[in-house]
Length: 443
Image 1 (cartoon, one colour):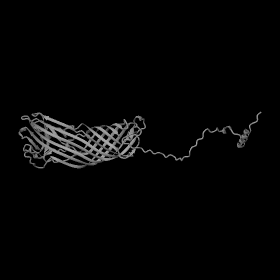
Image 2: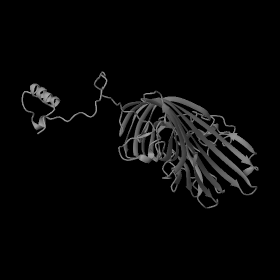
Image 3: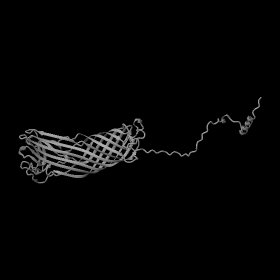
Image 4: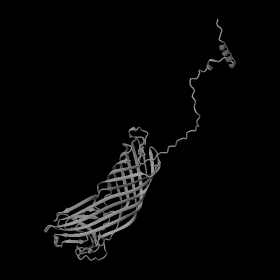
């Protein structure tokens, strides 16, 4: 039997002295294979990050680049590093209607000989004007609107926006003709405040009539509206799906309208005419401070925006009145030429007059858009615009006429009695509303 090595025996004695008792199997630790030395570093707890919602110009994309919905829209995200859109532009096609042109008095009547078409005569029919039931609607008006806007600050809290629209000049025409003889004639009825050419024409209801000669009565109406706005918007609340903004700005509105009435009598013997013309024109210019609110929400790529704006300020109303009687080819023995004065436009009111009044406008808008890309969005909208008071030409006609001042019908045109009609300005409210189709670009 071989004796153990003295070194081995010595090692066993050392282990026995260091260990108070036998080691359990679970106390045996395998030898370490690697030693990792980690340098000491200071440690501070991370501060919580506060993400403030970024405001939006129109619902659909925040700052023009991030979809305002958690729905998948991978194809619509802008490349990393792109700057958010700071400006936008919109172009719209308008298809609107405006309030029908009011006419405060009967303008054209008809009756058979020996009657002349005065309103107090049996058988008189009102063909145009008050009491006729004639529709004076201008129909649908095409137009265009352009809008430019942008952010005022780097925090995306305030924006500015300039917008303007114009509607096409629309017209309305009425025409009535008589062949003369025993056929019903067309006349211009009015109330004479003084007798003229006595004893044939006493004061009271009468009419400009062609007798048995062929005649024609025509009415031509026109209307055009345009508008400018400059607004600042301050965002009160915004998130990925909703925003609400206060609006403060300025509005200028311009409505221009005209009414022309022409009664023509034909002298078939020498191909001459006598044309009696009355013209009434109005221009309304509004300048007002504007306040309101805008809000909207996002439903995926669909966006809904609404706005309510109100403006108060002066309305400058200007009325132009003109009238003339013109003879051609020596009709009915009269000398060719033109004499001031028609029927409702006489020397006493021919010219211009104006006034300033306080007016109110309200503008309601509802828009639905679809975000094709973060920077391009087509949309449809409905817009309703109301104005509390405008001067319209058909309301400026006074049918109480003193014919003695008309040099053509009552030579030499020396006024007898009280001058009438006198200049006046009458206001009425006005509506314009309709659909619009537009596109928005952001850059």
